Amino acid sequence: MECTIKWAGPDGMAFLAETGSGHLIAMDGAPEGGGHNLAPRPMETVLAGAGACTAYDVVLILKRGRQDVRGCTVKLEAERAETDPKVFTKILFRFTVTGRQLKPDAVERAIHLSAEKYCSASIMLGKTAEIAHEWEIVEAD
Image 1 (tube, rainbow, N blue to C red):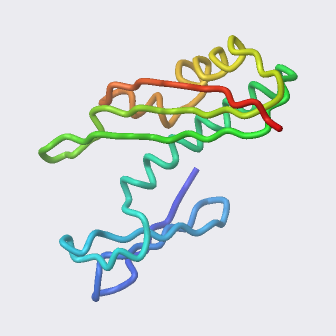
Image 2 (image 1 turned 180 degrees about the horizontal axis):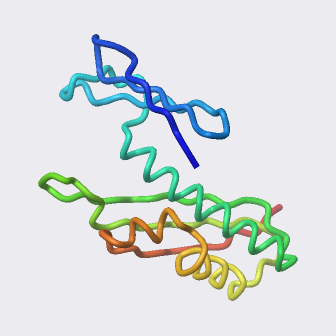
Image 3 (image 1 turned 30 degrees about the horizontal axis):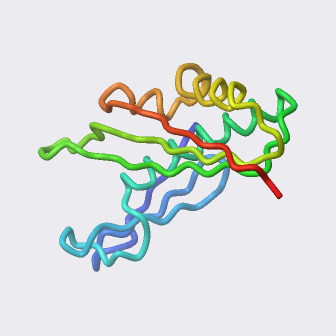
C-alpha cells in the first residue's frame, strides 16, 4: 500500500493525497493553524477511515451470514490528548444497522468480529484510545 501527499502551496496548509489505487483525498488545516478550512483535517480522515473500515466489515459479515442488511451508519465520537502528540484517547462507535428481520446476535457478532479481528484501522487506534461500541437495529420498510 502506498500514498503520495503533496502540499498545495505557500498560501495555506492544504494537502492532496493520491492513494496507491489512484484516488484523491484533499485535506486542509484549521484557519488558526494556517489552513483555509477547505477540506477535512488529516485526523478527521483517520477517524473517517476507521469508521468506513468497520462499517465495511459489519456489512460484509452480515451479508455473508445471509442477513437482509439494507443500511449501516457509524457515528464516531472521539476525544484527543491535550498535549502533543494529540492522539485519540477515546472513540465511541455508534452503529445503526438497518435491515429486514436482522438478528440482534448476528449484528452484535459482526461488530465484535470487526472490532477484535478484522478492522485494522480501529484495532490500530485502540493502541492509544479506549474504544467503545453501541448499536441499534432499525427495521427496514
